[in-house]
Image 1 (cartoon, rainbow, N blue to C red):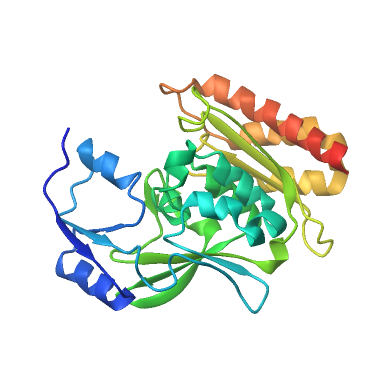
Image 2 (cartoon, rainbow, N blue to C red; image 1 turned 45 degrees about the vertical axis):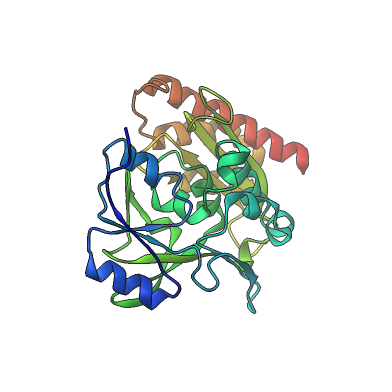
Length: 284
């Protein structure tokens, strides 16, 4: 199906982008467009105006902040996030999850911010950001605010963004530096399809914080962090792998669709959780 007719506007500043949205409230912001344009072709979205934000100052860069955090601009392609030295050396889990999204040509265009704003329950990058306890900085008609990633997803295709708000950057906190682990996923076609199931298990070297992180993709209405399993692993370590896997299975609420049955998804959550905990034990 061809794209529906729309007006295109390239914004060169946040105020210009917000003003363009306020003039046409059924507008949409455009960065990579790898989710938005296919949805328009399929007739699932009908924005009358696309506001291109790729050229907004700072949105195409990754910055080291004074407090040790790292800020990733909303227009930075996933391929650049995956390869950036600050990400690969300090937040390798995010690099691993970025590499799981689609094929290289898609990652050269798709953005981290777009992967979040699409709010797919199967978003690969979302589980890494949940584990890293990232925040997103947004600007809108009411001003600028910061949203913890833990409260950003509110349902399939729905986020905590208010009408007209634009995600400016994703901030990785310094306290998450060195979080290590693995992201295990299965899909119908490697590198070409959304995850049928995704499980991330990680451990922090920061002894002043809870050490373990368990996050799930594609098995609930939103990407999911399993706090109870984390607390169990903090108390008992890798010896509690089976119990942690059972908790993760109980926490998820998968559906049956073209990619897999609910029963299969729940079973794979347990399998991947046990494998990931075992991998952490070997690394230790």
